[in-house]
Image (tube, rainbow, N blue to C red; front, side, top):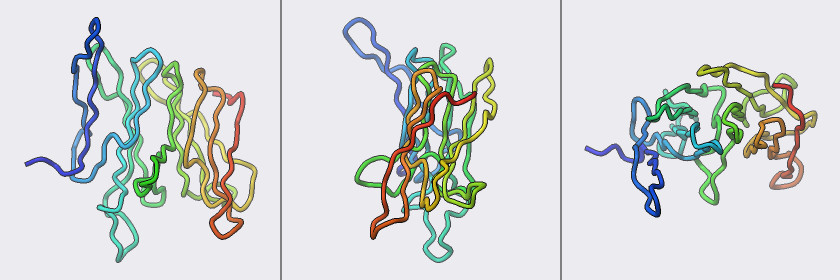
Length: 202
């Protein structure tokens, strides 16, 4: 039967004045509540596509252990060659929850990942991971070299009292500037703010 909330991404191509269904993309090993397609990012030339599967959500959460047994958010990267081919996947870990996005946010999608306009830079946030400074949240960068994606460093803001950094991430077209949201600890509901990183060396 159909896998409930497994998710899929539908690719359409414009032919003249009509949009024609081209392909249906799904996670390589789809499971119930994968929420594949919780977030999408397409490069400007339409050749690179990043898709978030928000596996860590309310339906997969174990309230007894406070964890998601064997479920981790994953960002999949596809390339059109000319069909869509899975090129890379970046999976979170039990201590790196909500990689790339928060499956619990119902008032608006939280997408902590972005693909640059040229399709060569990918930023993925881990808003609840422990950063090197002991605070919460970091953003990892990846660069595409040929058909391979390689790590290209990470950033954390030099601000203390972070509850989460990278709940939302936006890259410039060339991938050299990033805007990311951050949640501070001050006040009864925290203090949201935005951090800009310019001329990221990638």
